Length: 216
Ligand code: DX5
Ligand code: ZN
Image (cartoon, rainbow, N blue to C red; front, side, top):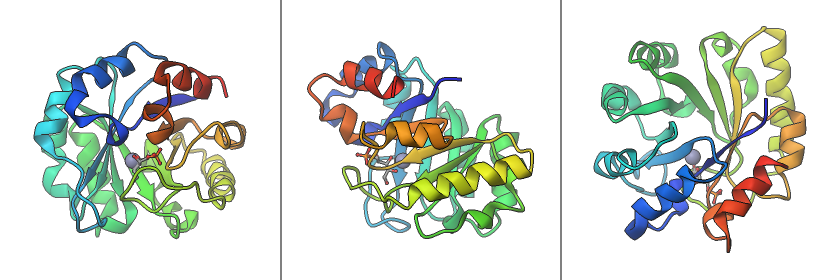
């Protein structure tokens, strides 16, 4: 299976969301990555439901929604009704992670769990078989355009071996600072999905940049 590319809308031009959504539709990208931030779990506020709805009206590819919000259970049904295909919550933001995952799945979405850079892979040991996707944060969440944290490579290896030892099925997604400098190593270690914001949208030709990552 070839790596999936999920351009992050956080780096798009918010005054031209229709244009940028169509760019993703016609590119080699696989998913739309949508970052929802609440200004509490992370020190930034991105955008909320009305903006997601506007994107959803133009997107022809699955919506990969990354919630950087506290107590995400409050909004699981809402994100299902807005068309999220994958809903990712943060390990650090959930008191009852197992319950959150079950609720996401019962609403018909794939369940993702994101880990901050400081959170050990072992934290997922008891729950890895219930998860459809693990999002390894390769920057501290909250902002696009940050530098990739090198320790992520080791975490991908650890996660890959946890998945293998438990015979689990979940995808490994990498989020933050992904470029052509780290993509091929991430893929060779077992990454299934690469999120890329600034590297795609701030490039001269986003179409070819997406293609470049796809072939990394
Ligand atoms: C960071 C977000 C990322 C971000 C990635 O909190 O979760 O998805 O948009 O942006 P780049 O690729 O620019 O680091
Ligand atoms: Zn994200």
